[in-house]
Amino acid sequence: MPKPRPKIATDPIDALLSAHGLRRTVAGRRVLGWFLAHPDTSLTHAQLQSALQNETPDGADALALDRVTLYRLIDRLTQVGLLLCRVDSQRVRRFQSMPESVHTLPHFECQNCHRDQPLVGALSADAHDLELAAHNALRALQALGYQGLSLDVAVRGVCADCASATAILPTPPSLPLM
Ligand SMILES: [Zn+2]
Image (cartoon, rainbow, N blue to C red):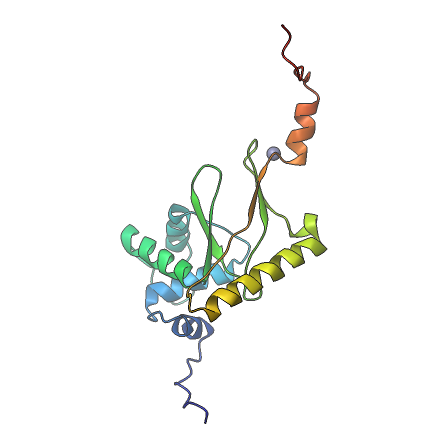
């Protein structure tokens, strides 16, 4: 027998917050709304704070959020899998919206120029395999009762641009000269 359906929130952002067990606060709507409106942007806490202060939707009051509240909110959104958190090579946490269909976004962090680039294009079909494998792993854990799962695949190394730039320099001898 089907369970009675809870009252459906009409606003998609409200619906997402409810579906993930979060309160539909003004701050929650604004923060999640901002990330969903800028799906390709990843921001640090501080960058998000100033973005929210500078960008006010029509008819809304400027959102005055203190740091602690904002940090807690972002952590909560990340825990429930609505935001994706990455730590870049300088140990700064950056957040972006979690794409509905994508559970992992393989990306590459160059240890030389510190660019962070998505690998989906470079890996083409293999990136899909990676995504599928991650999806299956998360599903298996969910079946065991794990909750609020997210997964991040980061490949670290030296990007092709940096590698070819270094190749111009004389290569050190591979054996010590004694
Ligand atoms: Zn590089």
